[in-house]
Image (cartoon, rainbow, N blue to C red):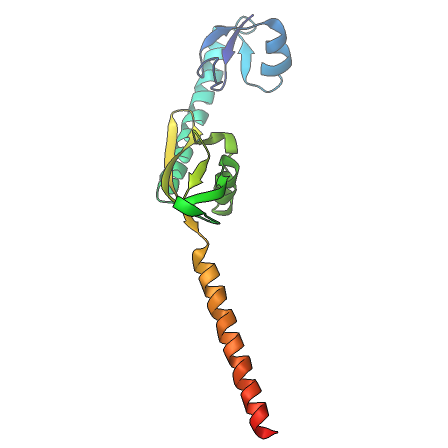
Length: 176
């Protein structure tokens, strides 16, 4: 069945393109989701009119997503993780964790759109590509730091607390 695509569909075609698909795929997936219209069902002028509307809508969407990608470029995501010897971390920083941090920052990104070849398994600063829309990508910085600072801080707090307890003990001995 020949259809005209109303939206960009990965591995099938661009908006306005006439493609041939199986009947069931068109009837059960493309038509109900309004992703395509039959190429031979309406007059050519009707289809051209609909495509003009769809292309304008698609252009507006593309400009909004381009602006969002520009905002995302300056973003730095920080992950504090436990690390062992040679700056190897326990576990890894995955695409799901990056997508969650982006969601916290106000960007709704699916984890499948985070382009990361392998999970991050060492401390450092990484540049990670985010696929915002077909043809629109953005890079964010992912900064993976260790938890040594917190451990040092908590150890200093314990030492200060024990010193204060000893001072109290000495003061109570002197009064007794």
